[in-house]
Length: 544
Ligand code: GLN
Image (cartoon, rainbow, N blue to C red; front, side, top):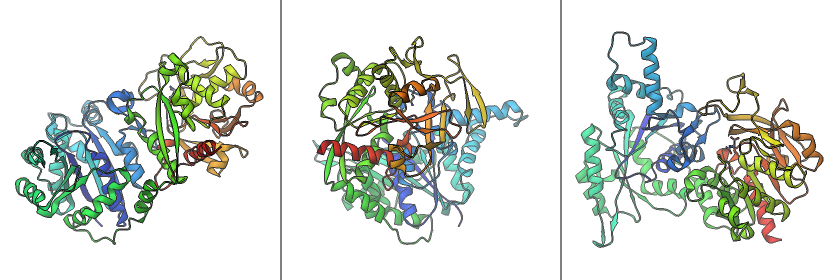
């Protein structure tokens, strides 16, 4: 079958859930037996979001090949089986970087390099690069229609229809239909204006997805269809839902997938949504609940822990329980000691992080978890600080710390490894405190060998695993001996035994820290083993 292309744009305002809409459409296409790939265009000039502050950008999602990407790719992986890599996220910065590099090499010799056609051609090439052996490519254009930044992307997808034929392209526009309390009705004007804007650029949407808090009446849909020049059965309600995992089902009930395959003139098998029905049944009918304290710095910004939150929910699904997340500000612990948030928790989790702020509060929370036998899960920075806590308070290594936070510590239990093997580039990398910040981390999937007698092996039930990384600092091998002597267990290491990947405390209900980010590989239909076991242990702790 010839590859078909779905383009998703957004109007009126941001945060309408375009990423979730795109992911859900991906899930619906897969439920019909189609193979898909997903692509996200981001209109900002950073080459990737790797160096961006979580306040600005939310979580940085990491793919197997070590690309630092937009958090929407996390949704794509949680909803679909699409294999994502650095090819699946592209920014204005990356496009310009490629074009300018080509210009310097002399590739356009004699020509004036312009937005049209050079930038737009490069954008189209990015889409076409994904066509290999998939039936459908779903491309989400970041930003809101009307922004200056996204214009080259919109122009490129406009041209695309002419290039590949109109029967192979479907434009979907997501807008807002707000309910205005004073008038007692929903308003269609913002949608009309947003579509007008899109049509001025030359794109006539085929489908409108209208975000609202209730279902739209046939009259309202007819009005939107008339003013926006779409067929009346092409206006769909994207109703607010309780759980994000309901979105594919709600879209399907509205007939969205049927309409898409009709527009793209595709014959598919009947959709099988049993996986999503099962997930939603579990989400809605938990038999129990647990409270997990997530101790971090960006507690007001849920978006910076997107994959983590979802992975915890998945861990709950595996145990038939609801997971209540209690965000605890680590600086608050520094000021006033572990308070209610910590003592209420059935389990304590310290996520990844960068920077000095709140570090001592996190160490305090870890100490509480260890001493009070509360299940503990430390991820990346959380694992590093668990090592420092153990070194200080159990192994008697006074002032032990990560060299990231105390360069002069007498016991740098976590430090910058001067030489390490970059598994992806197949080279030995060297680095020190002066190394550049962008792209110098250990990134992407690395294999890890597990020790048989361990919580980790009990969870994964296999000897070799592969997990994704995003960090600069590592466990200092000089401290293996003194720490394991005092009871710490090293249960996961790199195949060459150079890198410590997992640590545990055996004499504890469940205490595990991992140098990698397991949350990136959790799926609602396949909860990650470590999250499953952490939630299980927390549930047991609660019942004790
Ligand atoms: N700041 C730590 C490092 O760079 C941990 C990073 C993380 O948690 N992702 O090693």
